[in-house]
Image (cartoon, rainbow, N blue to C red):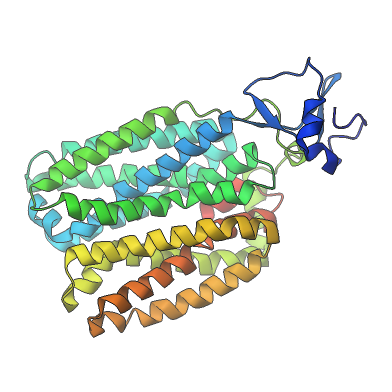
Length: 402
């Protein structure tokens, strides 16, 4: 064993992080879920066991990542092809914009339900999120198999269900990484799962215009998204709730309940200084992603060029975030990254007011790439910093409210 002291639960034992120490564990140690590494040890009854991470966590990470991809793609199914969608359903473009807005409002309306479900545990949260994604997509197809404009109300109901699903699956990554990963990999794991959401938006922005050559293609697009979502949602019912033994000693400290956690959040000036600007920042990003085609097409850009711009905004930001997340994880320069991201992003949004009128597609793409970099690089950082600043409030409180 890496440690045999009575207080090993609360002690940090750096030497136990090595692979060699794990090789010395007792042959009688349980091997459930294929344990991989140790950070210290935990006493279970009269048996002392090492803290571990488990291979099964990668299954959960992959499925939760894909759930976030598909719920975001479901949201942006119509925004990249607004005019074709309007013609297919027999409505105006304002109604198409409302389909995206309904999704966002439903997401917000689920906030306290999401907090309560996460308080009960990961499993009920992920089962509910997967079920809503599955049901919402097929209800949406039920309203889209023909060009009957009256069925747009069915699509609107489906968008609301999908928005509820996003509230659940987008709030789960912080709790999942806290439950299954050590402090060394927590920010990176949160980044992978959280940034999968804008990845889905990027896929939708690029792929949907390519699939839509005429208004009648909307029905096929909705069907394809429903099939892919089903393939992702079904495994979501089987993500395990928690490992048999925790990955670190922090999991032995009991978190406060919902109301006390909310009080901690409300009374924390540091949380206010991060959450409020992040709300504004997220709103700007969501609006830009949803309306990019309608922002640029009046200046002579095509739907395809607008879709590519929206895709670049997200893809470049994701690549930059993937590169910087491990570095930030090691350096712990969380607040500095947030400050730089907000300042750079604000300047880029200001530039976006005038750049489309220049009709220079290179300049437009450059500004959109910078917006993506500044926005997506800070998402996992904000989630982790809020978890730290709001301690001992539960991670589900900050991840949902942010």
